[in-house]
Amino acid sequence: MGSSRSASSRRLDQGLESVMVWVLRAGGWASVLVTFGIVITLVKESWPFFQAVPFVRLFTDTMWTPLFSEPQYGIGALLAGTLVTTGVALLVAIPLGTILAIYLSEFAEPQFRDWVKPMLELLSAVPTVVYGYFALLTLTPLLQKIYPDLPQFSMLSAGMIMGIMIVPYVTSLGEDAMRSVPMLLREGAYALGDGKLGVALRVVFPGAFSGLAAAYVLAISRAVGETMIVAIAAGLQPRMTVNPLESAATVTAFIVQVSLGDLPHGSIGYQSIFAAGAVLFLMTLGFNLAGHALRRRFHRAT
Amino acid sequence: MSVAPEIAGRDESEASASDTKALPKVQIHGLNFFYGTNQVLRSVTMDVPALKVTALIGPSGCGKTTLLRCMNRMHDLYLGNRYEGSIVVQPDGTDILDASVDPIQVRMRFGMVFQKPNPFPKSIYENVAYGLRLQGMNRRKELDEKVEKALREAALWEEVKSRLHQMAHNLSGGQQQRLCIARAIATDPDVVLFDEPTSALDPIATSKIEELIVELKKRVTVMIVTHNLQQAGRISDMTAFMYLGELIEFGDTNRMFTNPAKPQTEDYISGRFG
Ligand SMILES: Nc1ncnc2c1ncn2[C@@H]1O[C@H](COP(=O)(O)OP(=O)(O)OP(=O)(O)O)[C@@H](O)[C@H]1O
Ligand SMILES: [Mg+2]
Image (tube, rainbow over all chains, first blue to last red; front, side, top):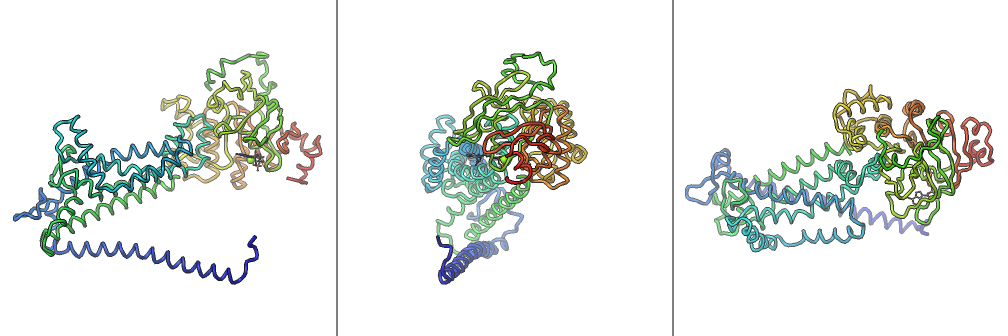
């Protein structure tokens, strides 16, 4: 049909193309700039904090009470909250998300998959406040039926709901990764006499590992950064504990709690939220780098 | 090997197998194959001799791959495919197309090597052990022995013995294909099916694999699809020429290359089409 297109329409195409390239490039740079902006703000605002408080105190103090008259700066009390809720969330999200991904990619009828995937993705569009109150008002009472001593605010309840929230991320990315494992590999295993489940677990799963690792890292970052659910359902009391049956504050919960109050700009309490934010940022950065390295290592394997 | 009970149980023990070499290994009879409504094989009938190399040749799209994949019921993996006719495996006389036969049992008797090397994302060792484990072999010592034997038969042992537990993907293409051959023969199948196993390889890797196939027929029956007529001439004992889903001519390779009976065969062999 359009084999002999006019020179002018070709020029128009080229013009459009260069405009598009510029738009995309601007978009790319914008995201880099925003990231830099965040880093600069974090450094600038937490700088005075680290001038006033020696860095080691973050790890030698055992409590996090920056607003008290005799403040303590043991960030471990907040990190414990973050790590425990994240741990609980991952214990829910990784097995559930992975099993669902395997099911959708290897066993489900295509029509069913096309129907379920958007539903799942809708799940991640639910506002996290809703999840938070769901944990507090529905899941916690339910858990209390099983374990009556569970306090009203608990890391278990918040972590579990956070896990449910993350499942769609793991499933969606994981399913993509598994479906991109070449059919030729599956056929190789079938040709040796393997069955559907065996092929899924022994060939497709390791073949998709780099993609799955990426999904898991995203899940971790998502859990570490999640704020609303933990602020609502896990409690706001920093506590150096690894017991998920207790209540505790996470790094993010502390940040919202303090920033909702009216601390004077420039006070040490105000600066402490940036210090906490900087620690959180370093943590997610660490996870992402580790995930990247893991992914590269397995990438050569697939 | 441990023949599957379903298959062994159906032994009708004909001719008491006095001379297994004379008896055909696989008897394909009146085989039609359909991808949905598209008929691709048309009443193919041929006796594949035991412990010989049988080559399938013919122009692109004539149905060579389709025929090969009937032999291990590979088509069962996809919906809408249909077979008619029979493929009887000797000495037990099982018709592997029979609805009562489990395709998994068939695949354990028919090894397959694909056009492109497809090692699993596992170590070299685990690749070769894959089929063995499926057949229930778990003892380390036994596995070690079988893996080494298969790798030696695939002429790969010397190159990989010091790195059996490294990922198979670090091997070269030719080594990967030999690994896939080791994987296919480790379980001592009755027949090994090759679909253009050298089409992705350089001449040196190709000649290694050709030598291997010739060596292999001492103990297994081989069927090989190839586009390379010289290759068919070098390694096969019997040749089947297919055209548009039909088996045009089937016979001794030397005879067929020097004195084809059918004009289509002659045209194809002399390079006039295909
Ligand atoms: N999955 C499929 N669904 C429908 N038709 C198919 C399918 N696979 C192959 N065919 C058709 O079946 C015919 C035979 O294909 P086949 O792959 O067996 O040919 P071939 O002889 O192996 O060719 P080549 O030498 O190119 O590999 C072709 O016409 C092809 O288009
Ligand atoms: Mg083919």
